[in-house]
Length: 337
Image 1 (cartoon, rainbow, N blue to C red):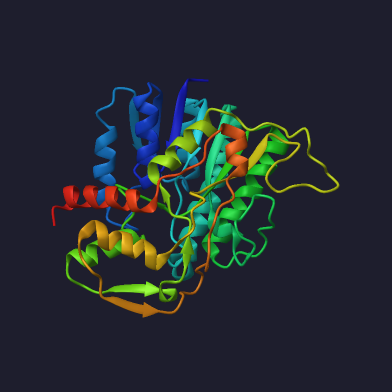
Image 2: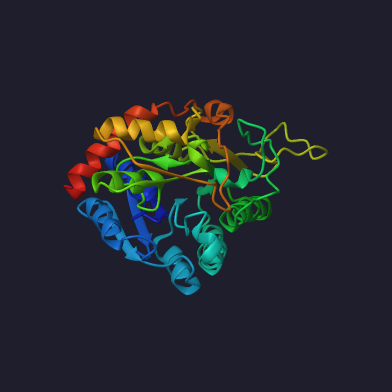
């Protein structure tokens, strides 16, 4: 086994930031990405260009759904740790193109698990999502809550990832940790996310579509906080929970080396207040098309952060106003509108 950390989806939003932090502290990173056209590949290539000058970084264009390519990759590089962030993202798109989610999020994740098993990696950390909480109205969401009622196919694939990972932890002793991300935003973010769409529209003098009449609640979590949590978790492999009770098993831990952890800001914010922070950062008042909630969307997300805090001594805390302003600074510098 090498001392390489494999980062899947390294040209993605979280993947690029995580790889940068790993490289900055001296780790060796092998990155893969399929650079697909779900959103502008030019942005993905620009992110990748930030990583490629590092002497300890290597990149291969590989789709995780390609079984032979993934098996060959693991056999060649023998990573010691895997940070699996490659996935088909987007709740609404999963309604229109479910096959993309089956290929990337289910088949692709199976290939990652099998590669980790074959290479006997020390720790697999993978991206889950707050969307797994589905129709749950008990907020803030805690890892002990049941997640058996997803309201989008995207959420269903992420729930499936969690139970697939547990089977490998149980059967093969593979330490696995799933991180349920809560609405990540910040510089280099995804163009399909609200902040990106709103910023582009406001700078172009166009109205914005505000779903749920602005009353949707999200636990917006700044990218730097996400990456800090990810790296701390990556450095602490999942372990068997000595307090695990098979008569009343908790969903977040196990007798196997397995954990599920929320990673959110614990500062639930109304969508309309998020927009207000953006208006302030841009100095522009938005013209708003108030619309009903979209199919598959959750009304409220809010993270109970006590488990992550107890496990690695960290919980995100960047205020939305500060994070949005940093995004606007990046957007103006990158796109020069």
